[in-house]
Length: 253
Image 1 (spheres, rainbow, N blue to C red):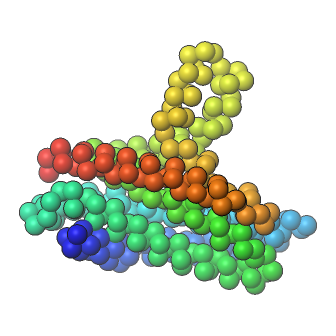
Image 2 (cartoon, rainbow, N blue to C red):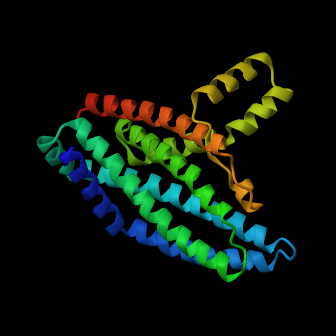
């Protein structure tokens, strides 16, 4: 356990000191100014627009940062032989688990910073609703799933570009799968319906971890819904973690 924590702390320090993290923070600050501009261009719906665009910004910046930072640092460690040093001092399962936990810590820090800045803007313009707090919990679960998916592709591929593209395409596929399912159910053939339905059942359903629309209108999800998505996310987290450990132990570095 001590080795997992030490690896997690090392990855936390490395990622927060990296230019990708500081660049993401600066970009989000500028994004908040963009949110204010959109508010001024939406009379009558200014508060709802501000809440919606802000939550979208937190989600997109955190996901893009996690995917790029995790992949870049993982391949940098491989190229500089630091990975060999880590693996000579700790088991492979401890290393990959520590790296994943380190990025979960980073996610918590970034979500705390971005949400505080976002809440300040909402308070400033009288658009704050406590429902936006509830929207951050499903987002946190979604990001954990993305960390685990990013880790799997980083372990599988020998190229950082391939790992990045595979992660981004899978994430977009998970996000767009509900829309694709509706289209094939209305217009698709039998084989297309079967294929898309099987993919929808197998892949993480990101739409289940999205309550932005409720938060925008000041509505809270039920306690049963929060328990359901927590159980759903835990199943995928455990399964993806097992895949991570298995793949990383089988690869030669």
